[in-house]
Length: 622
Image (cartoon, rainbow, N blue to C red):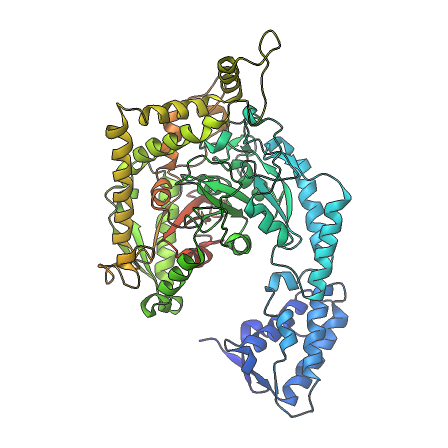
């Protein structure tokens, strides 16, 4: 039980009571603001909160002192002024309902935004640009924001809107990196391939346009594995992405793939957040390797219009950030219907999902302990000790918080990786057939200077323009779609995919909301079903770049494929999944912890619950 003190008629927890006032007390403005914020919300509907004249006079005096003690913190001062105006706006002793204009200061903006100065966005943008220069050797960004006055004006405008309490969104004025397979009108979109060298799209992808409409600024285009095909971001025409973590400063580590550039840009504060694409784990694996948060939403929630396709039935735009809050902010902007993308969920489908999640048995999860599932098949012998340790510590922490832990079986998991590497290359071989030198990208010249020979043009363009890994997957996909292999490989892989989806549906308490026969019902195993699944994101720690490429390379392509063993099943089922970094005490030194990515998987459409569980684990030193 937390003790409390009296303030007028309100009970105030001790942890939000401000320290004794003093102009040199740095933390006091924040504590005072928390006090006012607590009274404002109080866990109740703020529109029905009432305050007596005594409450207003006491808090008003407190806040006035703090305004003069923290003039440098303009946004906080502005917020406090609004509170003082409210506190003194009624006659003494007369209860007064909370006025509507306070919502612009308190409810619409999260606390971290209010605690920043009016110039914080500009300083943050300048710091991001400085980090882009100082971390250029990591090769995270292919193209960067130019040192022009245009972005400065946009940041200043965003600052002004935040000062007025009318920002466009939580990402207004923030720098967001965009993976280089997502089209941008002002920067080249190369997919890290010579086949699209210097290609500039005539339009923005829907997700880019949504971000710009919300006030965000494209910080640059992030490096990746060519056309998104890879697990380490080493198959790029611009060179590999490199990562470096504590204890490995002398080594260049793998950043994961294929969204390694996006992950490293976020990890090194070259941007506020980043967009990536996740086909079989391409957002979550880099997040695990770089200590960032990587979120793959349910398939179809985010528009793919303007995203260069790898495998249409699997591709999902994902978000990377340094914390769950930044990921949530970006996701909130891009999680909208787009009629131009036929795979994007329609408003009616979104309404069905919302109605399903409002069922009493599911809605009650917000205020009750969750059922956490542990997939038995994910406990493989190849799992590293650090990943296993982080997994067990995370489960132990959640159990201490009152959530129940139970094992579940996903028997088709052992077939998922093989099915994925049949289906994804098959779709890729079809999607990449268009890169022939006629419509897109660079076009080589014939020896005599005449490029009129079509057969020569196609062969030369694809031979020189596409990298070895892309060629490998195109050949694999073409074989899977051949008449001799179609039944034995492609059709069988599709059947495995359905079995994977069935395994997940049987494990979760909630049913798949878009299946007509299950709409508005609970799973047959609802009493034993779980709300989310928790497992490692990657089976091992990031390897050194030197072991992957170069004369000392010891890793084979097959070993790279197995890095997706924990991420592919959720992709095949189209489920929401997120990787969050957790730190566990190493055996030798409790201060120097091991960092590992923990993956949280939810039922289709249960993205909000996945983010909620991620918030429980993020930043924990276990």
